Image (tube, rainbow, N blue to C red; front, side, top):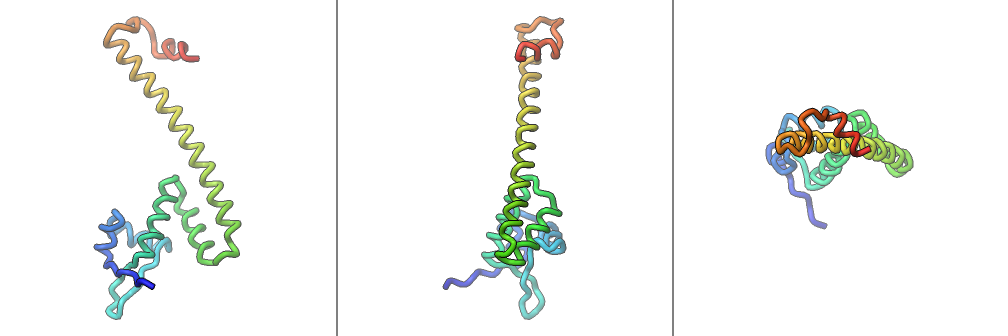
Length: 139
């Protein structure tokens, strides 16, 4: 079996695209665990790269720090918590999808506003037409 490469915190930070301050914060919050060499210097492994990558995906969904901590705690308890972890991830997925829909709706209004401004500038929209009146065209 291939052994993991060891990364000091600066190397690890650069590898995963985070600051050393953020890594220490994640460590203090219990999201990641570094190893220590015989001199007490913290280091990370390739497994830590994979784990942090997954955590960043979870965080990218908008998962709250409390939920991340819960997930990490459940994971550490082993396979007996798979159902709980799955339920947690399903909830986070639903919340993330709702946020995406909300953002898409906001972007649609923003696009209409840009189109309205463009129409005002190129005179394809009457100078007296309000944005609210313009939006009614699309209902």
